[in-house]
Amino acid sequence: MPVRPPVSGALVAVAWIVAVLTCMYMLPWAVAVTRNKSNMGVIGLLNFLLGWSFVGWVVSLVMACTSEPAPVVVVNQHGGYYPQR
Image (tube, rainbow, N blue to C red; front, side, top):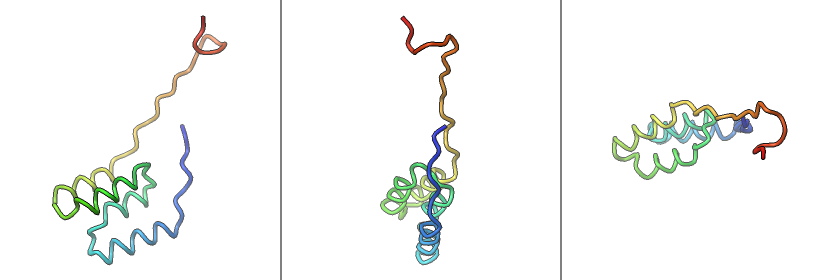
């Protein structure tokens, strides 16, 4: 499972300050940054551009709150190199 580097505390602080200053308009982005989502940039952009519509804001929040999909790991149980000839 690839491990993403942790998000800096400064970025998390900026995200929450922006969320508070915008009266929770940017809340989905702050949640995504705090949870270290792989698509936090997309969530922030979607929230910024379409958050004015209630639907865009809710979609951004749902994207920020869902869990990351588990990676698929394929194990070659026959030994040797994959694919075998």
